[in-house]
Length: 284
Image (cartoon, one colour):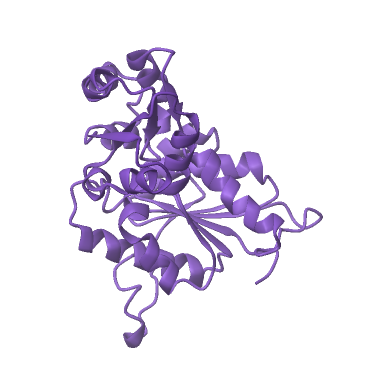
């Protein structure tokens, strides 16, 4: 493993850019390799077996492209496939579910934790499982938010439609008297201002991206993953999508405050797993 290798990050779409943004903040010298599976977004309604296949295909791509660390910046993939990814992967892997759940346990005052997430993540119940492993006395209340990802992917995260959706989804959690809410999808931090309007100031809102990247950084500080030489060339971040590149570049660039339109490339995801037939990734 070489110092100059990038950190691989993947998500169903632009949501994982919240994790990329945190890498820029915590590890500014590192280079990222980002994959957005926009051909299959949103992940929430899809069958678990299909989502697991996507996660393994994307992981293979990132490793083949030289990633020295994989950040699974998708709660759905982390919930369903993290153990399988780790079994298959030749480099360290960090998911987003456990860091978010652990931070909620640390910060809750009344032991009542809410989770806003996709349908698939709520069905799996990974946040509830992790909280129970730490403290069985705490209660977790999950709320699926199927309208959130399309709102973020289309750039409508500050719209009136977003505000109405937030009010609808947080209502059951407010009724449950939660004092802490985990944003259980990396798309959701882009909705944080309107979510905050709906829940008020007293409830703690957790974006797991900070803790997730901190875990990856800790692996570097322990020497498990080499740190990129700050004296080397300026990091060259790469962005790949399985769907249409221009819209990702436009929306993702606006979310990050960067110009990504000319730096986003299309990848044909299908067949990456089929190594026996020697299929190659095809760029558009």
